[in-house]
Length: 297
Image (cartoon, rainbow, N blue to C red; front, side, top):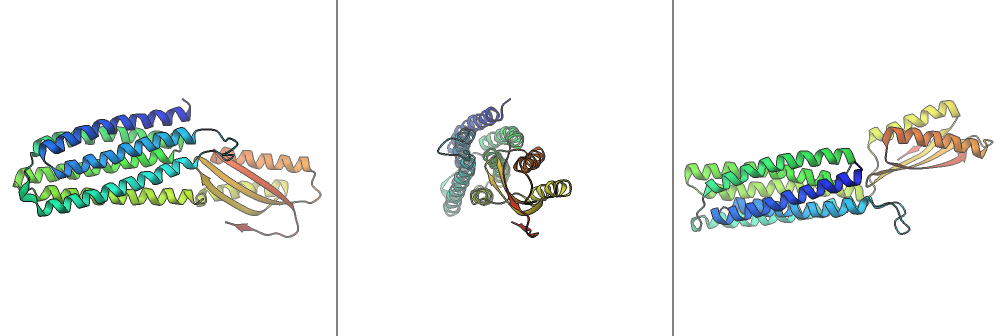
């Protein structure tokens, strides 16, 4: 199956799952009176909005390069991840506000924990299967938006477990303060997840270099051709652009080398790097040898 189709299908699955869970959680929250369940419903709402953004992002980023976007549309996925993180952080602050408010008004509301226990148990099972599926597709297609969506759903599972523990304590002790405490714990989980996704998205939007291991692989390939073709590495720059790994190389070659021979060397190096890293956009510039200089970014 084509990668673009895989990503779109995964995003649709995520949206349908989140929409269903939102409805169930809001109903259960209002029927039971539990602020922690309502907080989870808000959390799931941010999940659904994030899934919608992810779907739009993977649709947009899968488009080929055009006259206005000559390097492709890859950064749409990182913009989507950034928007997701902002939604998560906003949801986290809302839950904190509601949780603290209920701590001071706990005598004014009663909850029915049994309904919440069933709903949150179902939510955990549903999110487990959907997040595993999204992580699988994100890995296969190297999609940051789907990975962010999967990570988002994973935090939803942990917060659902916290809600269940809180409801169990309410049922055992009859003290609804545990419901508010759990709501605040959920908020902390949500905020931490949002901050982490924000950091990763920001790094890629400001042209973060490839990993050290990937850079070393490129240098090793060039070193091989340095021995066989007599080229020397002068400058190596890399950056991430959506799915693409953009690589700029300046090589020093014999000034007497014919253009067609130099071109063959470049083709060999490009093919070797592409086979090793995949999804690369490589630009190689040649300069005549004067002195051995090595500047690696």
